[in-house]
Image (cartoon, rainbow, N blue to C red; front, side):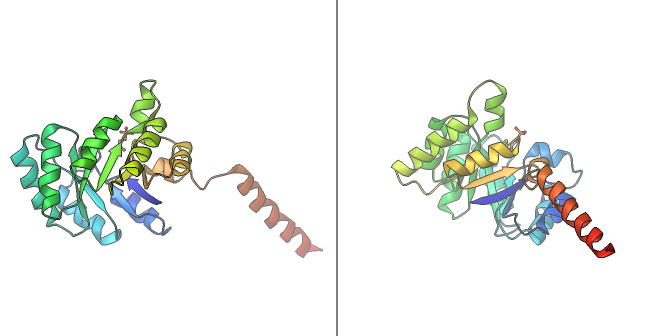
Length: 215
Ligand code: G3P
């Protein structure tokens, strides 16, 4: 089970990398747009901090453009995983890039049938967006369970990277199902550790210790 941070913000990445629990990073064009820095520069900065998969998404929508972008980005660092959208061109680009040994993360997965196609195209990761499904009154977590079952039935090597994670319960439920990876914003990652009883407990231990020393 792996934790990825879903961010392109280098300060956030450096802050949480210190905890030693971040196994990789996912970025997307929306996250990159907030940063005001070139994609290449930021991916290389991230690779200097995190020793694990770093997803970098193509902007082209045509097949040739996707493949060219993917190949170019894959040369930035061996840990770069090319993110392509779940479209016919994205699937063909996935197959072409994988045939050259380049890792691919097929993103914007909202159904089990899409995940099957991505796995058949040899995707290294599929990224089902569970929060966006919950937003439209669907059950994102049941999609994860379905994909996990299908991949097990057919022994697909494609890993399930749970994305669009909104709260710690999403993380725990993904892990109960056995999903391979959960990517989350720092707002969710930072909440995984929090519990009011822990805070109260630490405070009580310290005050008991100080009071005892006074005696
Ligand atoms: O990285 C893609 C995904 O995690 C986006 O999440 O919150 O914009 O649906 P969200």
